[in-house]
Length: 338
Image 1 (tube, helix red, strand yellow):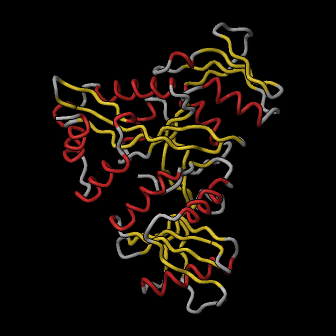
Image 2: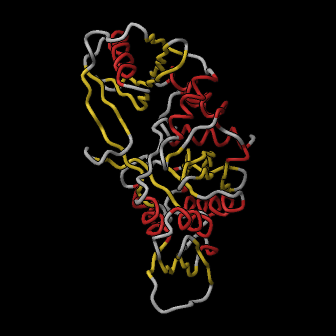
Image 3: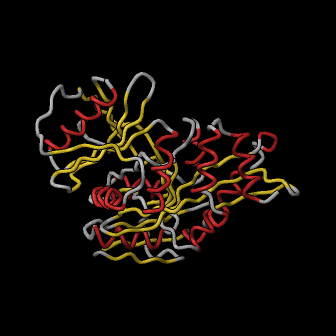
């Protein structure tokens, strides 16, 4: 049995996803080059996929690897297989020029597990309840449901997400997967146009007795109002739950985690963006020893040394450093990640 089929069989044992979703994932998302696996004899006992996503970070676009499908066969759990698998993944990410690794823990207890592997809980989201409008405001705005990938829709989504200062982005290839997943997950994509130009989009999912929108992007309030009115007409619901990037005026909930893979490059980008933030750091990383050492941030530059050059240093492990750097930027992770 080839590796892909073995990983698919392991997925079916470990997760409760529908057959339709699994087939879509392994047809569109899975590639051998993003897969990392541990075998016992000829059997795959642990596997994960490192899905590439760009991320806006301090005015630049850097590469991230999103951990997907991390699982271990029940007969081989609690024996260090996943720890070894993640360590191998980090080394490969470093070689491939990745700056951060990201993930969304499937269970609350996994936040502590991944923290021990260098991740920090930095991606938050807020929730807002919206009452859907009873009537339309502007007749110049038309709203349609789009069921097939369209370049202009992706371009609009990409432009709006790129406006966020620190946010996981989507590639054109990834947008194809999002569109393929919508009918499987009970979702719909609404597109608002004015004078044949896209002015807004909304992605909704039918949850347990409620409608959820995880992306509501619009140029103005009239467009947003038109999208919400169309959602009401289509679903018959009076209210919608909006999941949105972290809002300081609303409660925030933990969503995902990140881990610095290349500390030297991340800190240089950070130092350039925040020249006033001077730090002397002693960084420790149990999984990537190349990150161990002393970092000196001053006047927009980051100097690295394997030896101590002065007395006063803040000691940080890689998880604490990730939290220190990213929490300042209030990062957001798209809720369309699988």
